[in-house]
Length: 165
Image 1 (cartoon, rainbow, N blue to C red):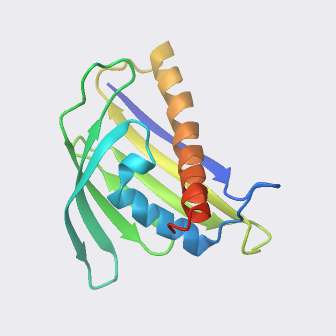
Image 2 (image 1 turned 135 degrees about the vertical axis):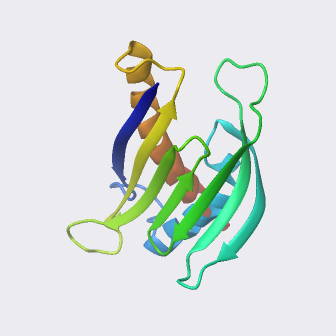
């Protein structure tokens, strides 16, 4: 079994990109990702919310079922029950039954300007079918960390452009 512990950070507003996203828009995007994961993650083909509850501290816990279609597979996976915890206004944790965890963070850059924002994903993926240190492990690590962050930013930008956020 391989446990991937890794992180990836990308700027949210690169020079020339439009529209410039605010932290409020990015937070709204992460909240939408929790409830509509299929809009953000190409491998998710179905996302159904089972429950949603707010804690006394203001954190929201959403339990959802996600179905994946893995590359090269001819059928979807069984639904995976995932618990998502929102920590407004900057973090969402995605917790899976096998102990895998993915955290999505919104952070400010060194200028502290409103548009100087970054998105960081921290992954603790447990992959029992991948041998640690193998070529497949390196490929999985390189592909997933970059694609996950960049595709989320671009989906949020698209939703803002369409007036959905």
